[in-house]
Length: 143
Ligand code: 4NP
Image (cartoon, rainbow, N blue to C red; front, top):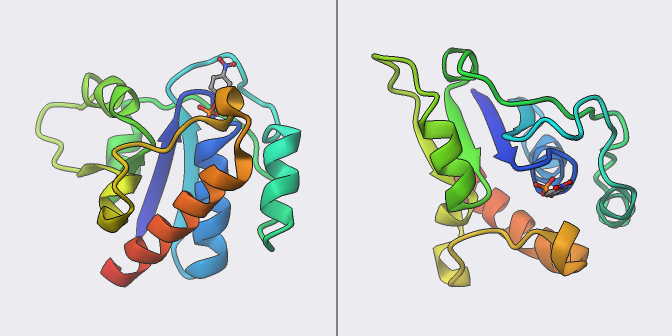
């Protein structure tokens, strides 16, 4: 199963989700990308790296890249962190592609959230990780 996590910058939420899934489901082929280009080539945001590492997810090796239409073919499942990411992904869908694009929060329906709040702005890295871990466990139950 090839799973791609997508956020805006690819330095906070999606690399965290990739790191969590890599811990929970090492047999899955995971990657992450951003809809924006600003941080291409950068490692995850240091405060997110530290918060993830404290929970056992080392994401220091990840590097940001931009989402592109070829990702629809390269992955079986694309998971966005919020509805804007989902729209920015969908406009790039190639004709005939049926790759599902879901929200990560779809996998934690009891959490009552429709997006992963962006800790780059909220500064709540642990709150984001709580929700990401909860949803990633839900995702694993579907794999
Ligand atoms: P992310 O957070 O989408 O979770 O990686 C962001 C990081 C950087 C920016 C926006 C969102 N930025 O505009 O630089």
